[in-house]
Length: 262
Image: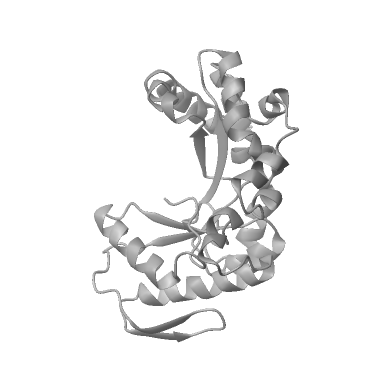
């Protein structure tokens, strides 16, 4: 699953549609295309400017429409306010259609995108998003639709080392999506996070060897009705040790805790 791809500025939706279809074939039906309205840091580089959020959402609606049409395998001509497609066709379609998830953060987004998407993606464990989706979308969460969340963690045998690494690499997380999506450069992220302290990061990101602390950080997601949670281990050089020492026991704890009655 992509978490998430922006199909508007750097990548034309027709290109995203073709890549997603190819990946679904290679993945033998296991792929989900997660889409979102993008981040200034990634998208401004092509010189098209950074549109207001309402315009970005309009662009995302058109992009999803184009992707859906192309995934029918028919010849597509599309004329929109933001995108055009001329005599395009995806020749090799996967046997299993590509499911589309969309990142949402409020009632307006749910109203706009739930009818267009197969799955809900969010950055906060808000039950209202799941409830709004179930009231708007044709397929409720749990009955075919998935609600997918994501949180960072920083596992390490040393609590001190984990906090230090999380502060070094992930203190931008404290700014929140509404701030982070509009920052255009790494310098902007550095400036926005310059006063974030290690203890501030440790309050937001579970750090250290305590797997039960990770379980408690994930708990609000399943209590809000989310079906899937992606855990992002901070620190690339520590991925292998995390997988070898902690991932298996952590998965067991998460499954046991989330399956227990409230």
